[in-house]
Length: 280
Image (cartoon, rainbow, N blue to C red; front, side, top):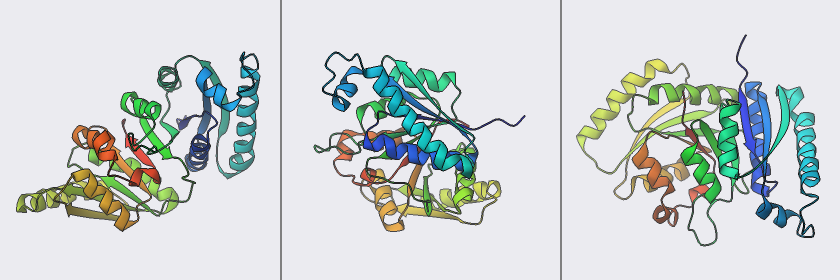
């Protein structure tokens, strides 16, 4: 029996989490997946949604009604387009801890979650909860910034660091790209202009090309004198990439993306999703 793809979509009913549900549902249609809408009861979040309920006695009813409405909307829109099922689950406790535990329990293939993006003070690229989940989760995660509404991706940008794991990770990207007939740019950003970079790039292309049975793939080597991650952002803007894909194994690059100092300079993550590949 073929394994059913499973998508876990945490929601706190905010605008950004609703956009993430749209992404999750559209992915679910293509993968013929089970979609789980997941909410963790949290007093602080609830008070923002329902400030008049000071005792919290109506919290569970409120949450269940909200989830049911979302679930019905997804079923109405997406079941006929390929989604296998959509259910909702409520847990109580710490949001990060419960989300990580349930992702493991249900053996999710990917988490799709919203984030506030860069806040007014530009201190964080993504919300602190989303950031902790990205760092700690042991499976793929797609982070969707606030005010990003789903559109079929025209181009995926995969940030390559010449790792052996790239060969396997790119298979996932190709599978996703086929669903939407998207281009894939496999990009390596270097901070030098050395001949060694070009040689390494050519070797990488020779090794990866046989693994790719997809004709809309471009291999790109970019040199950028300043920060490598800023060079990648520059490429994403000029190439009009719709989703950035990276491997969590790329610790140095990954750390740069999520560093506070860098976030002050990067605007890209306000309006584009980030897919972090964690498992194979």
